[in-house]
Image 1 (cartoon, rainbow, N blue to C red):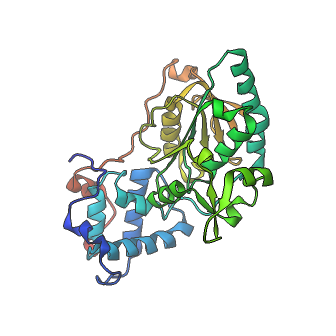
Image 2: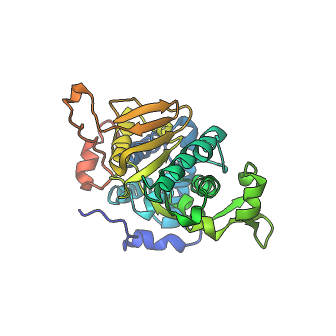
Image 3: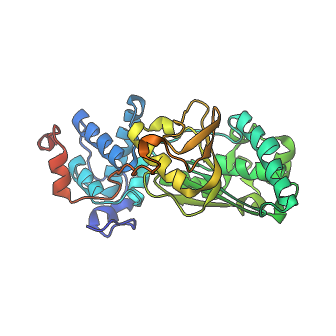
Length: 337
Protein backbone atom coordinates (compact mmCIF):
# COMPACT_ATOMS: atom_id res chain seq x y z
CA UNK A 1 0.00 0.00 0.00
CA UNK A 2 1.45 3.39 -0.97
CA UNK A 3 1.78 5.93 1.85
CA UNK A 4 -0.70 8.77 1.67
CA UNK A 5 -0.26 12.20 3.22
CA UNK A 6 -3.47 13.56 1.69
CA UNK A 7 -6.81 13.59 3.47
CA UNK A 8 -8.45 10.21 2.87
CA UNK A 9 -11.43 9.78 0.60
CA UNK A 10 -12.69 7.04 2.94
CA UNK A 11 -16.21 7.78 4.18
CA UNK A 12 -15.01 7.17 7.72
CA UNK A 13 -13.04 10.42 7.56
CA UNK A 14 -15.48 12.41 5.45
CA UNK A 15 -17.64 12.71 8.54
CA UNK A 16 -15.33 15.10 10.38
CA UNK A 17 -17.89 17.92 10.23
CA UNK A 18 -20.61 15.96 12.00
CA UNK A 19 -21.77 17.46 15.30
CA UNK A 20 -19.82 16.14 18.26
CA UNK A 21 -21.67 13.36 20.05
CA UNK A 22 -23.65 11.96 17.13
CA UNK A 23 -21.73 8.67 17.45
CA UNK A 24 -21.69 7.14 20.93
CA UNK A 25 -18.18 6.44 22.21
CA UNK A 26 -17.58 3.38 24.35
CA UNK A 27 -14.96 3.56 27.12
CA UNK A 28 -11.31 3.24 26.13
CA UNK A 29 -9.70 0.32 27.95
CA UNK A 30 -6.12 0.23 29.24
CA UNK A 31 -5.29 -2.48 26.68
CA UNK A 32 -6.57 -0.31 23.85
CA UNK A 33 -4.72 2.77 25.10
CA UNK A 34 -1.49 0.77 25.35
CA UNK A 35 -1.92 -0.42 21.76
CA UNK A 36 -2.33 3.20 20.60
CA UNK A 37 0.77 4.32 22.51
CA UNK A 38 2.82 1.59 20.83
CA UNK A 39 1.52 2.64 17.43
CA UNK A 40 2.40 6.27 18.20
CA UNK A 41 5.92 5.16 19.08
CA UNK A 42 6.13 3.21 15.82
CA UNK A 43 5.16 6.30 13.82
CA UNK A 44 6.96 9.04 15.75
CA UNK A 45 9.53 7.52 18.12
CA UNK A 46 7.78 9.26 21.02
CA UNK A 47 7.22 7.34 24.23
CA UNK A 48 3.93 8.47 25.78
CA UNK A 49 4.53 9.29 29.43
CA UNK A 50 2.08 8.28 32.18
CA UNK A 51 1.11 11.94 32.52
CA UNK A 52 0.27 12.15 28.81
CA UNK A 53 -1.93 9.06 28.73
CA UNK A 54 -4.97 10.94 30.06
CA UNK A 55 -4.52 13.69 27.44
CA UNK A 56 -4.12 11.08 24.70
CA UNK A 57 -7.21 9.21 25.89
CA UNK A 58 -9.31 12.37 25.65
CA UNK A 59 -7.91 13.18 22.21
CA UNK A 60 -8.70 9.67 20.93
CA UNK A 61 -12.30 9.94 22.15
CA UNK A 62 -12.66 13.29 20.42
CA UNK A 63 -11.20 12.03 17.14
CA UNK A 64 -13.54 9.05 17.25
CA UNK A 65 -16.58 11.29 17.64
CA UNK A 66 -15.48 13.71 14.91
CA UNK A 67 -14.64 10.96 12.42
CA UNK A 68 -17.90 9.08 12.88
CA UNK A 69 -16.04 5.79 13.37
CA UNK A 70 -17.92 3.56 15.78
CA UNK A 71 -15.14 1.75 17.62
CA UNK A 72 -11.58 2.32 18.78
CA UNK A 73 -10.51 -0.84 16.99
CA UNK A 74 -11.82 0.52 13.69
CA UNK A 75 -10.09 3.85 14.32
CA UNK A 76 -6.84 2.04 15.14
CA UNK A 77 -7.15 0.10 11.87
CA UNK A 78 -7.62 3.38 9.99
CA UNK A 79 -4.48 4.87 11.54
CA UNK A 80 -2.54 1.78 10.51
CA UNK A 81 -3.24 2.54 6.86
CA UNK A 82 -2.15 6.20 7.05
CA UNK A 83 1.32 7.67 6.68
CA UNK A 84 2.62 9.66 9.65
CA UNK A 85 2.40 12.79 7.47
CA UNK A 86 -1.37 12.39 7.19
CA UNK A 87 -3.42 15.16 8.78
CA UNK A 88 -5.20 12.68 11.06
CA UNK A 89 -1.88 11.62 12.56
CA UNK A 90 -1.06 15.28 13.05
CA UNK A 91 -4.08 15.60 15.32
CA UNK A 92 -2.99 12.59 17.38
CA UNK A 93 0.59 13.83 17.76
CA UNK A 94 -0.75 17.11 19.12
CA UNK A 95 -1.83 15.28 22.27
CA UNK A 96 1.62 13.92 23.13
CA UNK A 97 3.97 16.76 22.21
CA UNK A 98 4.69 20.26 23.31
CA UNK A 99 3.02 22.43 25.86
CA UNK A 100 2.87 26.11 26.58
CA UNK A 101 6.05 27.95 25.62
CA UNK A 102 7.29 31.52 25.30
CA UNK A 103 9.78 33.57 23.31
CA UNK A 104 13.41 33.75 24.49
CA UNK A 105 13.10 30.66 26.67
CA UNK A 106 16.55 29.76 28.03
CA UNK A 107 18.18 33.20 27.89
CA UNK A 108 21.75 31.84 27.93
CA UNK A 109 21.39 30.31 24.49
CA UNK A 110 19.91 33.43 22.94
CA UNK A 111 22.63 35.61 24.46
CA UNK A 112 25.18 33.31 22.82
CA UNK A 113 23.41 33.60 19.47
CA UNK A 114 23.19 37.42 19.57
CA UNK A 115 26.53 38.26 21.17
CA UNK A 116 28.83 35.43 20.06
CA UNK A 117 27.67 33.51 16.99
CA UNK A 118 26.07 36.24 14.87
CA UNK A 119 28.83 38.87 15.35
CA UNK A 120 31.33 36.23 14.31
CA UNK A 121 29.53 35.30 11.07
CA UNK A 122 28.96 39.02 10.44
CA UNK A 123 32.71 39.66 10.63
CA UNK A 124 33.39 36.73 8.34
CA UNK A 125 30.95 38.16 5.79
CA UNK A 126 32.56 41.59 6.01
CA UNK A 127 35.97 40.01 5.33
CA UNK A 128 34.52 38.15 2.38
CA UNK A 129 35.24 34.69 3.82
CA UNK A 130 31.60 33.66 3.81
CA UNK A 131 28.42 34.60 1.96
CA UNK A 132 25.76 36.75 3.61
CA UNK A 133 23.47 33.79 3.96
CA UNK A 134 22.21 31.75 6.89
CA UNK A 135 20.04 28.63 6.86
CA UNK A 136 18.52 27.76 10.25
CA UNK A 137 16.23 24.89 11.20
CA UNK A 138 13.97 24.94 14.25
CA UNK A 139 13.36 21.21 14.31
CA UNK A 140 10.49 21.13 16.82
CA UNK A 141 9.07 24.62 16.54
CA UNK A 142 5.79 24.08 18.41
CA UNK A 143 3.49 27.06 17.93
CA UNK A 144 6.25 29.30 16.57
CA UNK A 145 7.93 30.77 19.65
CA UNK A 146 11.38 29.45 18.76
CA UNK A 147 11.49 30.47 15.06
CA UNK A 148 10.25 33.96 15.90
CA UNK A 149 12.85 34.25 18.67
CA UNK A 150 15.52 33.24 16.13
CA UNK A 151 14.26 35.92 13.75
CA UNK A 152 14.42 38.53 16.54
CA UNK A 153 18.01 37.51 17.26
CA UNK A 154 18.97 37.80 13.59
CA UNK A 155 17.55 41.31 13.50
CA UNK A 156 19.48 42.23 16.64
CA UNK A 157 22.76 40.37 16.08
CA UNK A 158 23.53 41.22 12.45
CA UNK A 159 24.72 44.71 11.54
CA UNK A 160 22.23 44.90 8.66
CA UNK A 161 19.97 41.86 8.61
CA UNK A 162 18.08 43.15 5.58
CA UNK A 163 21.27 42.76 3.53
CA UNK A 164 21.41 39.03 4.30
CA UNK A 165 19.72 36.04 2.73
CA UNK A 166 18.07 34.61 5.86
CA UNK A 167 15.93 31.49 5.99
CA UNK A 168 14.39 29.86 9.05
CA UNK A 169 12.56 26.55 8.66
CA UNK A 170 10.19 25.70 11.49
CA UNK A 171 8.94 22.11 11.59
CA UNK A 172 6.77 20.18 14.02
CA UNK A 173 4.98 16.85 13.98
CA UNK A 174 1.74 18.28 15.40
CA UNK A 175 -0.74 19.72 12.92
CA UNK A 176 -2.37 22.09 15.40
CA UNK A 177 0.98 23.55 16.42
CA UNK A 178 1.86 24.39 12.83
CA UNK A 179 -1.53 26.01 12.23
CA UNK A 180 -0.97 28.32 15.20
CA UNK A 181 2.63 29.03 14.24
CA UNK A 182 1.64 30.20 10.75
CA UNK A 183 -0.67 32.81 12.30
CA UNK A 184 2.29 34.50 13.98
CA UNK A 185 0.27 35.53 17.04
CA UNK A 186 1.19 35.15 20.70
CA UNK A 187 -0.49 35.78 24.04
CA UNK A 188 0.95 38.49 26.26
CA UNK A 189 2.59 35.95 28.58
CA UNK A 190 4.43 34.39 25.62
CA UNK A 191 6.30 37.64 24.85
CA UNK A 192 6.93 38.76 28.41
CA UNK A 193 10.67 38.06 28.06
CA UNK A 194 11.04 39.95 24.77
CA UNK A 195 13.25 43.02 25.09
CA UNK A 196 11.06 46.19 25.14
CA UNK A 197 12.91 47.69 22.17
CA UNK A 198 12.51 44.50 20.15
CA UNK A 199 8.85 44.30 21.11
CA UNK A 200 8.26 47.87 19.99
CA UNK A 201 9.93 47.28 16.62
CA UNK A 202 8.60 43.85 15.72
CA UNK A 203 5.29 43.23 17.53
CA UNK A 204 1.91 44.95 17.58
CA UNK A 205 -1.25 44.29 19.56
CA UNK A 206 -4.07 42.90 17.42
CA UNK A 207 -7.47 44.57 17.04
CA UNK A 208 -8.99 42.54 19.85
CA UNK A 209 -6.21 43.64 22.18
CA UNK A 210 -5.53 40.07 23.34
CA UNK A 211 -2.68 38.83 21.11
CA UNK A 212 0.56 40.26 19.80
CA UNK A 213 1.20 39.94 16.07
CA UNK A 214 4.65 39.34 14.62
CA UNK A 215 5.94 41.96 12.20
CA UNK A 216 6.12 40.94 8.55
CA UNK A 217 9.90 41.61 8.50
CA UNK A 218 10.36 38.67 10.85
CA UNK A 219 7.65 36.46 9.37
CA UNK A 220 9.22 36.82 5.92
CA UNK A 221 12.26 34.90 7.17
CA UNK A 222 10.23 31.90 8.37
CA UNK A 223 8.69 28.96 6.54
CA UNK A 224 6.65 26.36 8.43
CA UNK A 225 6.19 22.69 7.54
CA UNK A 226 4.79 19.67 9.34
CA UNK A 227 7.52 17.04 9.50
CA UNK A 228 8.39 13.89 11.39
CA UNK A 229 11.96 13.81 12.73
CA UNK A 230 12.11 10.06 12.12
CA UNK A 231 11.90 10.69 8.39
CA UNK A 232 14.73 12.04 6.22
CA UNK A 233 15.34 15.70 7.02
CA UNK A 234 14.48 18.53 4.63
CA UNK A 235 17.07 19.68 2.13
CA UNK A 236 18.76 22.79 3.38
CA UNK A 237 22.42 22.28 4.32
CA UNK A 238 21.66 24.16 7.50
CA UNK A 239 24.21 26.34 9.32
CA UNK A 240 22.40 26.07 12.62
CA UNK A 241 19.86 23.56 13.95
CA UNK A 242 17.77 23.99 17.09
CA UNK A 243 16.73 20.67 18.59
CA UNK A 244 15.83 21.87 22.06
CA UNK A 245 13.86 19.78 24.54
CA UNK A 246 13.05 17.21 21.87
CA UNK A 247 15.27 14.29 22.77
CA UNK A 248 13.60 14.07 26.19
CA UNK A 249 10.59 12.55 24.40
CA UNK A 250 12.74 9.87 22.76
CA UNK A 251 14.38 6.66 23.85
CA UNK A 252 17.86 5.67 22.65
CA UNK A 253 16.58 4.19 19.40
CA UNK A 254 14.49 7.25 18.51
CA UNK A 255 17.32 9.61 19.44
CA UNK A 256 19.78 7.77 17.19
CA UNK A 257 17.42 7.96 14.22
CA UNK A 258 16.67 11.64 14.78
CA UNK A 259 20.31 12.68 15.16
CA UNK A 260 21.23 10.77 12.01
CA UNK A 261 18.66 12.72 10.00
CA UNK A 262 19.67 16.03 11.57
CA UNK A 263 23.35 15.32 10.88
CA UNK A 264 22.56 14.61 7.23
CA UNK A 265 20.78 17.97 6.86
CA UNK A 266 23.66 20.07 8.22
CA UNK A 267 26.55 21.51 6.27
CA UNK A 268 30.10 20.63 7.41
CA UNK A 269 30.97 22.47 10.62
CA UNK A 270 27.37 23.48 11.32
CA UNK A 271 26.17 23.82 14.91
CA UNK A 272 23.45 21.98 16.83
CA UNK A 273 21.71 23.51 19.86
CA UNK A 274 19.96 21.14 22.27
CA UNK A 275 18.10 21.62 25.53
CA UNK A 276 20.09 22.37 28.66
CA UNK A 277 19.23 19.00 30.21
CA UNK A 278 19.82 16.96 27.06
CA UNK A 279 23.10 15.32 26.18
CA UNK A 280 24.24 14.11 22.79
CA UNK A 281 26.82 11.33 22.84
CA UNK A 282 29.85 12.93 21.25
CA UNK A 283 31.62 11.01 18.50
CA UNK A 284 29.16 8.14 18.12
CA UNK A 285 26.44 10.61 17.10
CA UNK A 286 28.63 12.44 14.58
CA UNK A 287 28.76 15.57 16.75
CA UNK A 288 31.51 17.11 18.85
CA UNK A 289 30.55 18.87 22.08
CA UNK A 290 31.47 22.56 22.43
CA UNK A 291 29.27 23.55 25.37
CA UNK A 292 26.83 21.57 27.54
CA UNK A 293 24.08 22.37 25.02
CA UNK A 294 26.12 23.17 21.88
CA UNK A 295 27.50 20.64 19.38
CA UNK A 296 29.32 20.82 16.06
CA UNK A 297 28.86 18.48 13.15
CA UNK A 298 31.83 16.17 12.64
CA UNK A 299 32.60 14.15 9.55
CA UNK A 300 34.86 11.78 11.49
CA UNK A 301 33.16 8.67 12.85
CA UNK A 302 34.57 6.53 15.67
CA UNK A 303 37.09 3.75 14.98
CA UNK A 304 34.45 1.24 16.09
CA UNK A 305 32.62 2.07 12.88
CA UNK A 306 35.86 1.74 10.83
CA UNK A 307 35.48 5.34 9.79
CA UNK A 308 32.16 4.62 8.14
CA UNK A 309 28.86 6.20 8.94
CA UNK A 310 26.42 3.86 10.73
CA UNK A 311 23.22 2.80 9.06
CA UNK A 312 20.21 4.86 10.21
CA UNK A 313 17.69 3.28 12.55
CA UNK A 314 14.46 2.34 10.76
CA UNK A 315 10.98 3.20 12.06
CA UNK A 316 7.62 2.30 10.52
CA UNK A 317 6.51 5.85 9.77
CA UNK A 318 4.73 4.59 6.66
CA UNK A 319 1.84 2.10 6.87
CA UNK A 320 2.34 -1.61 6.46
CA UNK A 321 -0.27 -4.06 5.35
CA UNK A 322 -2.92 -4.18 8.04
CA UNK A 323 -2.83 -7.92 8.61
CA UNK A 324 0.97 -8.01 8.84
CA UNK A 325 0.87 -5.28 11.43
CA UNK A 326 -1.80 -7.06 13.51
CA UNK A 327 0.15 -10.29 13.48
CA UNK A 328 3.13 -8.46 14.97
CA UNK A 329 1.08 -7.09 17.85
CA UNK A 330 1.91 -10.07 20.03
CA UNK A 331 0.54 -9.86 23.55
CA UNK A 332 -2.31 -7.51 22.58
CA UNK A 333 -5.75 -9.05 22.38
CA UNK A 334 -7.78 -7.22 19.79
CA UNK A 335 -10.61 -9.61 20.40
CA UNK A 336 -11.37 -7.78 23.64
CA UNK A 337 -12.06 -4.58 21.74
